[in-house]
Image (cartoon, rainbow over all chains, first blue to last red; front, top):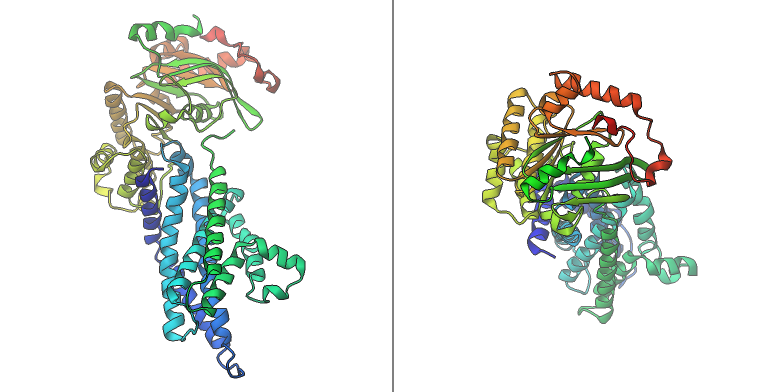
Length: 251
Length: 273
């Protein structure tokens, strides 16, 4: 590891993004707009007294899902470009470590994800009065962990796509099942055994579980830290797998 | 004349060549591309790699910079097996298509590759000046002309001050003035001790190299000086001479067949060497 190369990579990735105003706007603004849509979707629901609003449940989960989806897409396309343009091959003829490259990417997009979730969480709290027991800082923390997960999966999946068109097709394969099975639509304990078993090995499940812990308790629980640890461990594991897809030499 | 024409030269320098290949075979996937090459590239010289499109020039260059695995034989670069870790600091590579980030400025591109080689600000400015892009330093690479983008790519290699610089068709798309400028720079680098391997199919450029390697169908046709090329090809026009040698070899040369890829290369065409 060479921290300067890692930081240089993160800086390079961020300045590439900086020239792309439209993508920045998409990353920062779209989640807030979608949250707005969710808020108004459930605006007129009638609730029995004491029952939390649907927005407090769904809106909260979306705060974790956005960074995951957006960072998966952004990373897999950026990395694919790097592979097809020849810059990756060129980089791998330099002294840079694969880990410095991948963690540089991870760092850059995690920073973007932190900004994104700050904006989205602020909107959820201050504009729509998101009402949960835990502190918003923990929500942002889980959102960033999720973004790192999306970055790791994006880096890994880009190895299996030859074109940007193919890379986008990984979205329904990798992302949508996790959204379906994470507990957003149906609580996991009400799923059949097969689906529940699958959802047990999907990383997004642990993020949603973590957010539910934050929503239900005013202080961080052991289970929250376990979930967070699981997300980070999976992300690191996938990053290692991604490193294995980077070959300095073609056979 | 035998293929060991390089030997006296290396002995005179009292050092191993910058690149030494013996019985070098390379396959792309299953397809044999280089069939047993033996050659030496002398240190501190400009060596031209010439050959028709598809002759294996790029594959050979990628093997030398360590981006392509070799399947048999040996390939030593600056005294190390090609692709060794220590070589990553010493070998620069400019691929045929410019491998830079179009959405970054010229300066940001060069600065990034400088960081990958632990080089600083002064090296960045020097590399940009070397390719004549100072006025464009703060412009986005995507907004530059094709020739300018090629020079950004070159600057990203120069910034590392490599001992061996491998350039795949570096002057494609450059106007004659810039082309002459770049060759002057290559010459100056060689005088400072850098070894350059430059592929080209512009024969006029061959005259600027000290040694030429002629590649055809993955085999080495000849290793000679520009003077020898024009003598052997019976023309002072290097392009005519090159064509003459290619044709001559085509007559004696049987087309490369896949099954012989495992054998040590016995050149049917050694007569031209």
